[in-house]
Amino acid sequence: MDSNPRVSVIGTGYLGATHAAAMAELGFEVVGVDTDQAKIDALAAGKVPFYEPGLDVLLQRHTESGRLRFTTDLAEAARWADVHFVCVGTPQRATSHAADLSYVEAAVTGLAAHLDHDALIVGKSTVPVGTAARLRELIRPQVPTDLRVELVWNPEFLREGKAVHDTLHPDRIVLGGTSPEAEATLRTLYAGPIAEGTPVVVADLPTAELVKVSANAFLATKISFVNAIAAVCEAAGADVTVLADALGHDVRIGRQFLDAGLGFGGGCLPKDIRALMHRSRELGAHRAAALLQQVDEINMAQRGRTVAMAVEACGGSVLNRRVGVLGAAFKPGTDDVRDSPALNVAAALHLQGAQVTVYDPQAGETARRTFPTLGFATSTREAVEGTDVVLLLTEWDEFLGADPAQLAGLTAHPRVIDARGRLDLGRWSAAGWEVRGLGRAA
Ligand code: UDX
Image 1 (tube, rainbow, N blue to C red):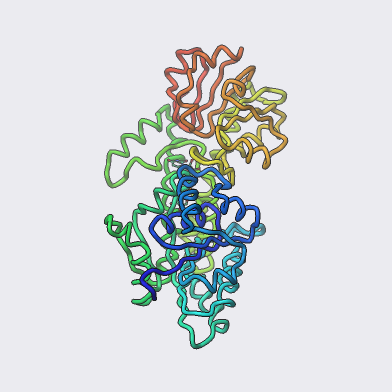
Image 2: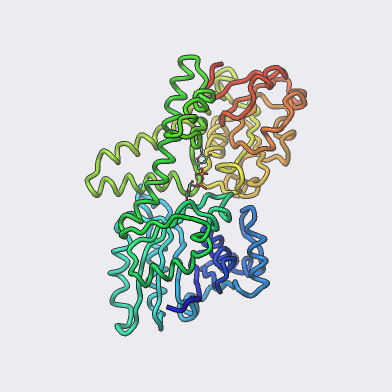
């Protein structure tokens, strides 16, 4: 293949939009493809349709330079590009824990139907192990026999909020099921990160697919482990935040992903561990499935525990009580509210009759669209004013830096629950707040 291949990126969500902009930044001509006309119009105008720090700069730079363009025409992209990255979503199915692969199948078969020259199809979406092999079979009858079309897997590990950094400076590059030619093409495309020392792991197709879901399952397990221990801490009068710091000094353990609290949410971790649980069962690996089931259950229980703590703080019922919720996004640094633990807790309290007011520095609008019956504020002060209890549910810096003494003056009942283990409870207590924290002695 050409030493300067043209690139298409199919699916322009968090993953695809970032990957398309990053490929342009690495020097390639790129077309981004999506079925959503509004999203394509926004991206073509250099506007990111979601909050992702730094992506707007790259997008503007390369839509202006002409190296990056967007279209809804998959057939045109199939004819124009040489390498096609598949970045469409694989959400959880409505009726089971399995991943919905209909978007991946539609993208790959839609693409294959229009190929008129040799091409490399590179799957980046997170898929259950065995999907890539099945996709190869699916497209085999579609591709003219005189063309050389290869399908490989190259999973993506980017974090929302740090997507640009993670794409341009990944921890590793995994190349699955590549022929020597395909490997060479991908090494050309990733020459920038490789020159910086990013390790490349060459694997077979199933291993590459499994690396991604195992990485997410491990991170989820780490969080649920510390949350399970947090319950022991609470019962024993210990402090899980100090415990996590001490554990983290062991380099074999590491401090990251040991923040106990409300647990994990978002568009990846929850659905990925459930899909792996489902696939493990299908493959007869029942112990792996049982482990992941516990990870999921421990995680979901943290939401219930937080609701119970709020009820307890209000004397046994939140009916007609005013609850201030700080945070709506599933984590700081994003406006993504998919499977957000914060909104889940806010909605549960609302259902129990509380008057809930939510404030989030970025996710207010997306949260309002998802839960229009909740109250929304435009500042921390407004969310705290006149409340019976305040809950810290997403640890934005804005909340961690707030002055507890000033906020205490806004309510006759200064009570705070830190569900993210990030407030200086001593300082809040000294400022007059009644404080509680998940996994921390009362
Ligand atoms: C994750 C993976 O990190 C990334 O590699 C993969 O490609 C996609 O899924 P992301 O969903 O963006 O990325 O979020 P991440 O930063 O991993 O956080 C996931 C969730 O775990 C958040 O809800 C966060 O609040 C929670 N979390 C994280 C904890 O509860 N405790 C921690 O110590 C760390």
